Each structure stands twice: as structure tokens, then as C-alpha cells.
Length: 86
Image 1 (cartoon, rainbow, N blue to C red):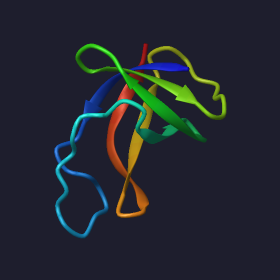
Image 2: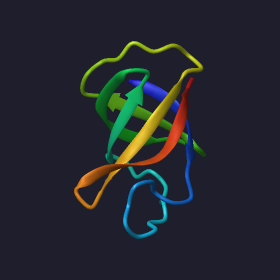
Image 3: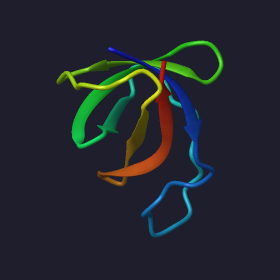
């Protein structure tokens, strides 16, 4: 599991139309890029901008590191923000 402090973008990156990014929902499937590692995880939102992600495949990461967060939009994963590992 990773505990993240999430910073979402206003619009999703890489979509043909401008899609507004909504808050992360419980049990939502997210793709995380941690350094060179890529993994899928299930989101468990907590208070404020904090999210706990249960990973399917473990990754090696340091506290304070950045994580790219992508959500499935239109059948593909699109960048929606980043998180700082707590």
C-alpha cells in the first residue's frame, strides 16, 4: 500500500476533448508510475487530498517521492495528476 498526498490537474492530459478531472472515488482503479515502475492499484480516499492505494504489484519507493497518477478515460489510461508519498 502507498499513502499519497494527491495533487490533481484541472484537465486530463492526452484526450481529444477537454475532460475535467474529478476527485478520486473509492475503489477506483488507478495506474501509478513510481520512478521507472508501473503498477495498478485500488484507491481508498481518506480525508482531504490524502489517498491510500492498495497495489496489485509492489514497487520500491522512498517517502517524499513523486508518483504519476492516471485514470481510465475512454478505454485508455490518462494522466490526471501526481502524488507525494507520505
